[in-house]
Amino acid sequence: MKNTALTDTHIALGAKMVPFAGYNMPVQYEGVNIEHETVRNAVGVFDVSHMGEFLIEGPNALDLIQKVSSNDASKLEVGKAQYSCLPNDDGGIVDDLIIYKIKDETYLLVVNASNIEKDWNWISSKNDVGAEMRDLSEDYSLLAIQGPKAVEAMQSLSSHDLSEINFYNFLVGDFAGIEHVIISATGYTGSGGFEIYCKNTEVKQIWDKVLEAGTDFGIKPIGLAARDTLRLEMGYCLYGNDIDDTTSPIEAGLSWVCKFNKAFTNSEALQAEKERKPENRLVGFKMDERGIPRNAYDIVDGSGKTIGRVTSGTMSPSLGIGIGLGYVPRVFASVDSKINIQIRKKAIPATVVKLPFYKG
Image (cartoon, helix red, strand yellow):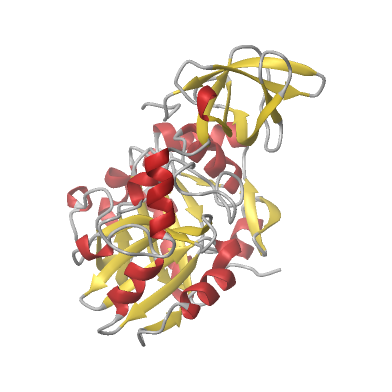
């Protein structure tokens, strides 16, 4: 079990620690609902240092990234980031990721913690262009400062105007007394804020100053459980649940990050799939009656026949109803379609809805 540089800090704060992606991580502090509402209404800080970071450099860096990623990284300018995925050769997804253009010929790829080794091996296997690759995952930490009060609460920690960093833009500058920190207007909560990339040796100072600066704004440390409910309310995919090696980006609703103006791994097959329309689609649904959908629950039709499965589900803290994501045949994928979720021995009715669930 690996620890982040802040593990002892979380334990001292009374966090409930659980194994996650090979790391000892805080799942909650005060409770999921309290932490969730803190991020929706004020500001919270997550330790997500388990995420992986790869640096791809050199004159052929872009060539490699274009080959392995589905989005068009040639559109990136320095200071901009892009959501993308790594398709495999069989129609599925190796991982989803964020690509940052740090400077000309230098890119940072941020990947999921559970896939660090797999992603590194996959990208390396495609690197026949001689791009320079470095795995920085063990040396860098990542904090997510999320919520509508994040800009105001954190402004005192930087000489840069944080309000001027647009969504999916970033800068490298001073933060909490540390120089050369990546301050990125990204996050997986749907409530705005920043992600801060720094060295492991710097993160404790930044964490402490973030909590101090946010005191008057109601800041709290937030665990992974609330991170999951927050991302699910936005309909964001979680790798290992909603997307994996067997799900295509087209059926997962990620065709918007598949740019077929360039060639990339399995792009011809994915383009053909998009044109003929996939047999199954990932949809969001709300429960019509009391019930909490969970991962791997069956989705059934009116006659009780299994037509799909739930990939993510929870009781939405913001909406007070059960919500979920799941794959269903295309005939059931339209908004307002009626489906049923098999919860123990009962088929509970649900309705397919347009994402996101939460509209702040």
